[in-house]
Image: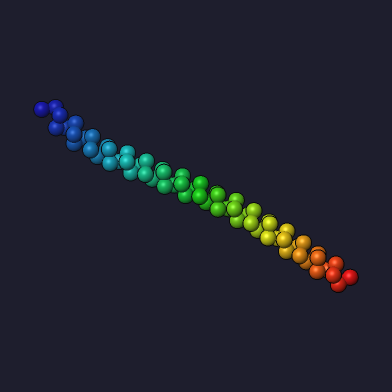
Length: 64
């Protein structure tokens, strides 16, 4: 007799907890991937700029 109300309460709680954990996982994953993307872009831009400046310096030495 007491088991029926418990099942009715537990099922919505399980759904809410599942959705909550899925939302937290999604948000934290997006934040981690966004941070990783920003770091990779920063490193690639810095290396590209260094390569361009060194190539420009070599070209400038050729014409001196």
